[in-house]
Image 1 (cartoon, rainbow, N blue to C red):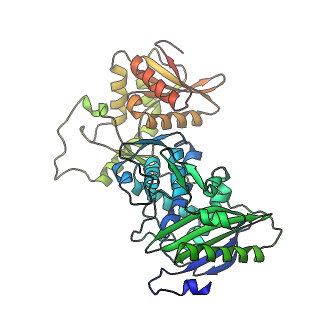
Image 2: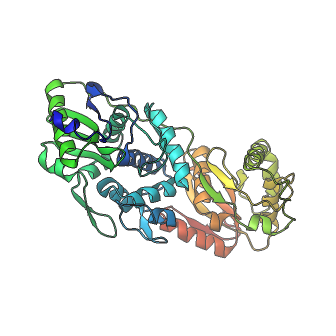
Length: 450
């Protein structure tokens, strides 16, 4: 098959790597560290980050995603999603992994990080954590973009992590067809899956700049081999070369080897979603907008928010004392709904003087409004930290209904209880209904309940 790789002069550069998946040992390589266009091999990282977000509880398979105009406008291959359409994460995953749908990949990135640019930053952070030292992502789908590059070695490393880090999802890559919510789709890798014994994935990719790419895995008995090819001249030539490389891998790999799974990375900093603070925060006391020539830069705004966050942490006891009322639960920790450092980047529309302490303003508004004596409980947890994290995550997911609520953790005999307090009856009921629909335990409590 050598002639398949020495044809047209305008063919994309060729690179290949073969790895024993059990040990990570490289069995063959050629140009394996040359930075090339990965095309839709990119979606392996898109899906890896989505699986990581599900593991962290940021989203679920049933989370409904509203399709943006940007996602709907992506070039083929695509599922055919429409702007404004809502579809569950599980179907977007199927479309991205099986059909290699670009619109589904973009929608997944936006669902996890708020924008594709933010998602690309998270992809790059994950790549670094995985040891993919020669990879840079600029988008979630893999269409050609300046600087969007990877290598045969890095993509093989990523494929190995998909196999061992998320075995519960890996079967997606071997499905020859699947239903993606709006229609049945076929696997772009089905020819190799059908014709090579033991093949069970992983991902194809093609653009003019990249050529025909493929990361393939096959398992025979106790042996598993991963072969990666960049720069194939056609689907048939690429598949034939990958089959040769897999055969080479099975011949060179020992029949017995101790399985040494790669370590799954656990990033301490997540790429933030971009959200807007509810308008109610500033609607009480409008002030003239900043003059255009004196308006703070985005960097200044973020620095101000960070400073406010630090003040909130340092003065939590003082704030809790000021916010206390006769109906407060004994031993509670009261915290305003606020921007969590390193988790949420807040886009603030300033209508108050910069020097005014934002946390106190939020608490004053919540505590002086009439009729907000209702609360909701999210149940009890083994540690205060878990309860506080749940409240924080829930507040961000339901900022439309919980923007006026205070977060309160109560030390109960059977655990730390997570509560939102300072709600009207209508807001408490609506918030609880929405949380229940997401699968959260939720209980509405009236005035005086404990």
